Image (cartoon, rainbow, N blue to C red; front, side):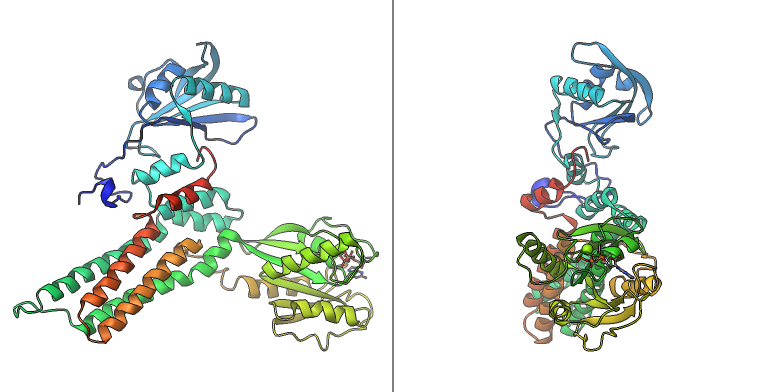
Length: 476
Ligand SMILES: Nc1nc2c(ncn2[C@@H]2O[C@H](COP(=O)(O)OP(=O)(O)OP(=O)(O)O)[C@@H](O)[C@H]2O)c(=O)[nH]1
Ligand SMILES: [Mg+2]
C-alpha cells in the first residue's frame, strides 16, 4: 500500500513502509521534570538533532553504536565544559518520533539543563511545544492517535489499575480492536460497490441485501461493545467523585478524615465549621476516588457560608455519588429534610452517623428515588466503614475488581467517533432492509469507515490534533 500525506492515508505503526514526514525544525526540551535530581535528560528531535548534539558533546554519532549510552562532556554556548554526562543517538526512523533523536543525560541540576537547552537553541534548535515529540511520533506513523492518548494517560495515571489500562492503550489495544472492524467494513464496501456496478451482469453473484445486513449488524454489535467499555475506561482514567453532604454538625468532616485516614478537615462541634469544600483522593479498587467534604446545607445569612452552600450544590450536581449524613443521635428536623430534598434524586447512600451514641433517628421518610442503601456508621469509632466502602464499590465501580483484559475506551472522543459509526451502520442496515439500491447502504458504510478513521487519527483535522496534543506537557 502506498500513501501520501495529502491523501489522508497516514500509516499506522508497524506498517514498515519507511514513510516519514519531513519536519523542518529541530526541537529540544527537557524529558525529565523540573527540579534537582540524580539526572536530567534533554531530548532533541529533528534533522539537526545529530549535528547539534555533536557540537554540544564534542562527539559524533558515527563514533557510537546507535541507541547506546556513551559518556560525554557537555558544553555551553561559550564552548566551556559544564558537565560530564551521557549521550545516546537514535537514528531515524528507529526513534520515538521517527526522526533523528538524541538524548543527553546530565547531572540533575536545573541550571545545567537550562544552559544546555539554551546552547542547543543557539545552535539552531527551538524549544518544543507541549506534546510536540508525541505529535511527531504520531505524524510519522509511530503510533496512532489512541496510542498517543494512552501515552499521555500512562504518565498521568494515579492508580496502578489506571496505569495498566493506559499501558494497554499505549500498546495499541484500542487500535487493534478498531482497525480490523474498519477493514471488514472496507471489504464490505468493495463488495457493495461491486454489486452495484455489476448488478446487470449475470455471472457475478451480487451481495444480497440480507447478507449485507448481517455483516453490517455484526460490526455494529462489536462497536457497541467497545462503546460500552467506556464506563470502565472513563472511571479508570478520570476516577469518580463522591460528595459528603448533610446539614451542619452531622459529622461530614469527621467522615472525610476517617475515610482518608488523616486529619484533613477541621472538626468541631460548632455548626458551620466547614465553609469551603475540601477534598482528598482515595484509591478504591484501582479507581481514583475523589472524596469531597462540603459545607452543611442550610439557609444562612452569613455571606461566606452562603457561598459555601452554593458550592456544595455545584459539587453535588457533578458528583457520581453522594453520602448523605443524618445525625442518628437526634431526631431529624426540617433542615435535614430540606437538605435531603437536594440529594433525593441523585444517586446517594443514606448514612445514620454517630452510631456510638443512643439512637434517636432511624431515617424513616428519607426515601428519595436515588437512594442506593442506608447504613449506620460512626465516623468517630469507625464502625460500619467496611460496609460503607463495600456499598460505594457496588455503586461506583461494579466489576472493576475484574482485571480488564482489553483496552477500554477512555475518552468521549472515542465514544463519539464509534457512536457515529454505529449510527451510520444502523442506517445502512435499514437501507439494505428496505430493498433500495445498495448505493444507499454503501454511502452509510463509507461514513462509518470515515468515523473509525477519525477515531484512530488517520483522518484528523488540525484543530483536533492541536487540542489533543496541546494537553500533553512539554517534552512529551
Ligand atoms: N459521638 C460522635 N460524634 C461525632 C461523630 N461524628 C462526628 N461527631 C462530632 O460531631 C461534631 C461535628 O462534626 P463535624 O465532622 O465537624 O461535622 P460537619 O458535618 O462537618 O459539620 P459542619 O462542617 O459544621 O457542617 C464534632 O464534635 C464531632 O466530633 C460520631 O460518629 N460520633
Ligand atoms: Mg465540616
